[in-house]
Amino acid sequence: MTKTIKLTAAQALVKWLSVQMTEDGERFIEGVWAIFGHGNVAGMGEALHGIGEALPTWRGQNEQTMAHAAIAYAKTKRRKRAHAVTSSIGPGATNMVTAAALAHVNRLPVLFIPGDVFANRRPEPVLQQIEDFDDGTVSANDAFRPVVRYFDRISRPEHLLSALPRALSVMTDPANCGPVCLAFCQDVQADTHDYPESFFEPKVWRIRRPEPDPREIEDVVVMIRAAIQPVIISGGGVIYSDAEDTLAAFAERHNIPFVETQAGKGANAWENAFNFGSPGVTGSECANRLCAQADLIIGVGTRFQDFTTGSWALFKNEKRKLVSINLHGYDAAKHGAAPVVGDAKATLEKLSSLLGDHKAPAFDARSRSDWHQRVKSVTAAPLPELGNHLPTDSEVIGAVQRVATEKTVVMCAAGTMPGALQILWQSAKGGYHMEYGFSCMGYEVAGAMGIKLAAPAKEVICFVGDGSYMMANSELATAVMRRVPFTVVLTDNRGYGCINRLQIECGGAEFNNMYKDSNVEVQPEIDFVGHARSMGAHAEKVAGIADLEKKIVEARGRNIPTVLVIDTDAVPGVDAGGHWWDVAVPQTGGPERLEQARERYNRNAADQRVFD
Image (tube, rainbow, N blue to C red):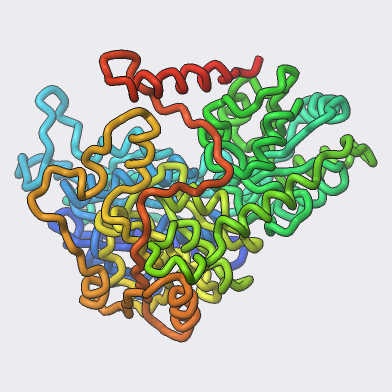
């Protein structure tokens, strides 16, 4: 006779999560971020209280941003550990949809557990319920369906017996990895069921390392041997596969230079002689030159986002061919690439073994050193004779770079800084964390906290503009409460400077991006220092570049977040590197500036090439 244990569905869920283990003997779901409401306070809330430190609960300030912290944690842990996030029904749940989309785009595991309506339907419509006039089974949580890898609605207690293993199998699958949503009907959370005791036995989840198909490998070996100017594009999959050293050894052994995407940057240190920086829209001059000339582009663990490919106008060699090494066939087959479906590390090792001592012809190594001289010039401190000169974003990056150590991790998500950092930041190995798959404003502060929770020995420096800071800053208070130290470099250019420059580049008038160009009667003078201090952080307004360098060093001794506010010039761009980005310009109906922008657009669009 099967032994059973009577538990509420919520108690069963948290008990089961508490015994799902990694190969290192840790919980895969380390804990649960929670904001309680009427959809989860009685069921999930009581269950989480009861289980205590066997599955810790952490309080956030906003459902979206506490999910961002969970995402940053999973990314830093290389998808080998994760967090769960629970909310009430209604706005608490829909607040998390943006974060779920972010996790989906970036292929990162998060377990979303939003409360849902009553399965028994007796009190309908309940507070915050979305009623679909044509479908009685729909709730607000159906908004999660397109932005998670697995969705389930728990409308009976025994559903957990199949739903929970399915959820973890997705989150630990290297190919299908991504967020999961278990919409948990609030009455069902409190319902009891006799669960088999065996359901709660500890289970170890292993991250598979799929071997590539020998036939696909053989095809690529032939292509590499025939290539005259090959280049490797190193993506985030290299990091998740622990293949950084393998890729560097492959590049050196076969004399093939590599470039790094936003997700892949920092896999190998910038000093590596085969590392030419980043490609595409926010790429280095030397990387983009390599890519433009390449007759073979070998993508490893990348999904070939438009920024990486310069909207597919970067690869100009008419003989170009594309190889895509990826865990998922969907990514591997993009743009007619020769696919290799397999783990990055395993595939590179197989390729190298079959290539033997083959080396590609020599490439121009001088362009790399020329580029780093250019970076040094652009990021140099302003000359003293400039007086009260407002620093540029490039100069701010230079200040942080000069005081960075091997333990420094810089992070960002949206606005000017992601592109500027990809072009200019000279990353130590493991020293770069960018959310640029979804480019989500508001990820920065919460993400910095998540990184520090995952890597407490690292110094985390968060770059954030005043626009993104205004969107989501409340987890600063959480970091203060939990004594999670990191440094925020808040660049205040009084608006959305990045999009303002894009607006001008596209032939538009300066409109509604900078405060000065918005329909307001009074220009805001926001006291960011006072605001950060009100949440308990250490905050200072820095006087300039030299003062910023000093204050970053001083922040290293604190056990709470430090916010350093610096006024910057909104007008200059990076002034180095870069490539065209396909942002549609109106074809007609505008002034001369729009017509000129459209002419530029047409010239660049003519370079867009598909692979066949």
